[in-house]
Amino acid sequence: MYVASKLRSDPVFRTAFDLLRETAEPLLDIGCGVGLLPFYLRERGFVPPITGFDLDARKVATATKVAAQHDRGLTFSVRDLAESQLQFRGSIAMLDVLHYLTVPRQATLLQELAASIAPGGMLLLRDSPREQSLRYWSTYAGEIFAQAVSWNLGLPLNFPEREAITAVFSPHEFTHEEIPTWGGTPFNNRLFVFRRRAAGADAN
Ligand SMILES: C[S@@+](CC[C@H](N)C(=O)[O-])C[C@H]1O[C@@H](n2cnc3c(N)ncnc32)[C@H](O)[C@@H]1O
View 1 (cartoon, rainbow, N blue to C red):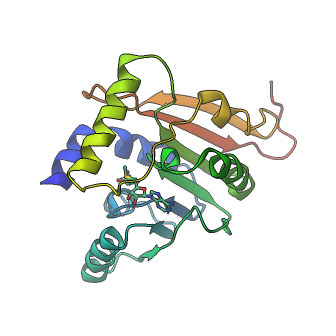
View 2 (view 1 turned 90 degrees about the vertical axis):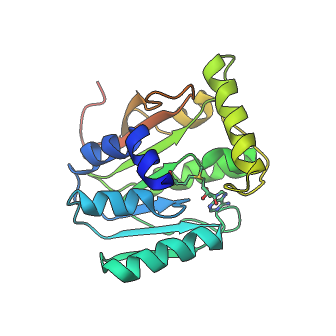
View 3 (view 1 turned 90 degrees about the horizontal axis):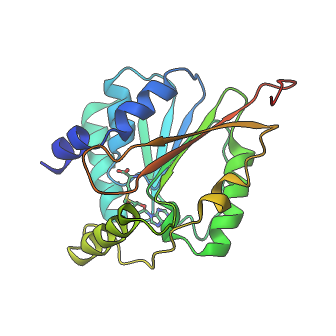
């Protein structure tokens, strides 16, 4: 029921497919949870290799079990992003994860994300930028609720400033787009899309 309602109500999955279908790069899903995005992309016919990792062993076990039943070439592992550096080249999705990391780790991770995006690849990073708006505070309250009912791990919340995200992606190297993906919810879910420019492309 959770999967059905999430896929129906959250436009990020359709949006991610529409963006990623342009690319042939392998995809890494950081903080993949139960693997909703990888399974959705495969169902829609996205062919490149997809791997995902998450800190929550319970969610990774669910994703691994479903992947084994359906043999869709998806691999999932348990890994703590707070404790490990990225070693990857391709496209990356990181949906609703950044705010669980400390502010210093967010800063180093954003640099690692920028270095990991291959030419022709893209970063899809969704989060709720910290701002004085009803949408921001609704997102904050929603997170507290998800932790209270034990769906999400009880981690400290550090919602990032918008500028802390965008400043890392130089306009000379990346194009930048910001897409609202809150659908019918009161949340502040914004999808930041950074595409690495082809070498020699004009930033203007
Ligand atoms: C709100 S859920 C989003 C799950 C998935 N991206 C989705 O959109 O369905 C956030 C996920 O980030 C994971 N996470 C939080 N901190 C993490 C860390 N340090 N390393 C890896 N995953 C982490 C949580 O376990 C959780 O599954």
